[in-house]
Image (cartoon, rainbow, N blue to C red):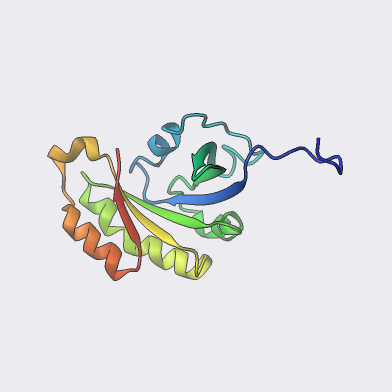
Length: 156
């Protein structure tokens, strides 16, 4: 316990990120890849939101990452504003083997502009292990990210 009776934090920094994107782009796979991926929130698995945390060591500091998956729900608009409060970033996820999921990113950007303006965005091409089935060229996604002031990564 801390000096005021509050629990001692097990981290130096807390970073909250939201995962958005169409259904079946692998947002859940990204969450599952977290090593200690504990679901600690009373909101986990309710309202169509999945929540995982992990703590990493970055430059000698313990950083607790919270990842919130909106599950591509149609009622995204009604809940997004409350879940985006305090977020340090939004990961826009698409499946590199599904052209339609990449084309849908424009729609997600419009939702973010309306409900979470100013929150930094990262474009994430998922399922890199299936690159032999690629439908979205890396350079096209990178150019799209640059045009929309986003960082870009491909992951698996």
